[in-house]
Each structure stands twice: as C-alpha cells, then as structure tokens.
Image (cartoon, rainbow, N blue to C red; front, top):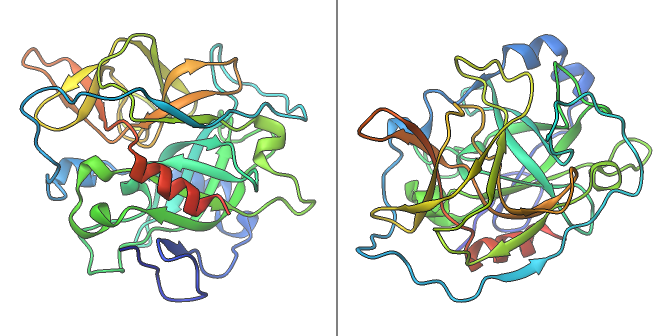
Length: 303
C-alpha cells in the first residue's frame, strides 16, 4: 500500500511539496549555509532497526538494467574538483521540525529530466505520526560547489518513499525519489548534467564501486563533492552492502555506482543509508542494493 500527504492529489506514494516556493525567497545563500546534515539522524537514533534478516549472503540473480543513462545535451561549466560527477548534487529541505537540512542525491534518467534518487530518510521521518513525517521545500543543486551550482537549483515537486520505510523505518527500504519543477525557461537538470542509469538486484559484494556525496559533518564542511571507491562486502545480518569510507552526515542519499560512463553519469545500484565503525574504529557506509520495489517506485515517479 502506498500513501500520499494531504493537499493536491499526488500519486499514492508521493507527498505534495505544497505551494511552490521561490528558491531565491526561501533557499537564500544564508539559509543554505545554515542547513545542517541529519546528524541526529534516523539512522543513528535508530528508526526501528527493522530489516529482513539473512544468515547467509543473499544470492542474487543477474542484475537487470531497466534504466539506461542519458548524456547531457547542453553544456554547463562547473568548478568542481577532479573526478566530481556532474549529475550528483546537494539536496536541501526543511524537516517536519521546519529546520533546514541537507542530504545528497543524483539525477536519474526520466521522462521529465527532473528526477533525483536519494535516501528514504531524506524525504520522510517515520518517527513522526503517520503521514506527518514528510520533509518539504526540497531544493536540489546539481554540481554544487562552494555555495552554488553552475545553473543554480531546482525546486521540488513530489517526494516518493516506500511504505515499509514510512511505517517502521525499515532500512532495507531506505530509498526515495523526488521530482522537481523545470526552470522558468523549461530547462531540465538532465539537459545540462545528464541522467544516471539504474540497476536493480545487484550483488552485495562487488569490485569497482564508487560512492559520491556531500559530507557536511566534521571534519567536512559540505562545500564540495567527495567520493570513495573500492570493493563492497555483505553487511550482516540484513541484505545490505558496505564499504570502508569516512564520509559523514550530509552524504546520506549519495549514489553508489557500479560503473561510471564518464564524468557526467553512470549506473547507480544503491544510495547511502547510514554508517558505522568496525572493531578497530574504521568508518564505513551502508546501503541496500536497489530491489524491484525500488524499480516500481521509480516507475511511479517517472511520470
């Protein structure tokens, strides 16, 4: 079952963003600078740690590519660091508490050209009363660097989350999509930054993975993209995947690439959900590879 927030009737698994807010009036440079990562995040304060339990590493069938990447058709000069991904950006939003927060996200190929993949906890807080946990006033800045992006930001329309996340904070369903309005002249994000492809049912253990995000908690400041690359492994006891990586809060919702096409797009198979440390104190990130439920959510969002 999927549900919607009160207001204009969006799809059943989506929350309406409400009245369109002029980014220049709401997400001012000062407000963007003061937005904080979800440090007191659902992951750390333990939004019910319900996720299906596995005693052996999940056996995946062949992963299926159902969304192919799309290259940009226009150019947008960036001032990003080397190896930055143009289609990755910084996500700003207000929580149910009305405080400004930040996550990371990535543009995915879509009909509208304005669809972003991020984490479920970046769009909905399951600790709030039912249907009262929607984040709002989403604002996405592709290729964000040092306070701005080459074309500014896009204003949010609808957020899409999975019911198991909304009901109980099930981390195996900590994935989401957000649709955005085009710019005033009709420009889409995808035109200038490209749209990433998506794969589903990937293995939890694989080589050659690259994770991107905008860590904003110490020692990072959230000013530029960072990345980690290497091998992932199965994270017990659930069907999660993990990689050693020091990126802090703010990188939540950032894409996990199984392959990179170029410095614009690649194939995304998961998004950062939470983090932890091993017995030696080494930090790592955790994600659940996108399932076919996430594919269905994408199909709902890709209208």
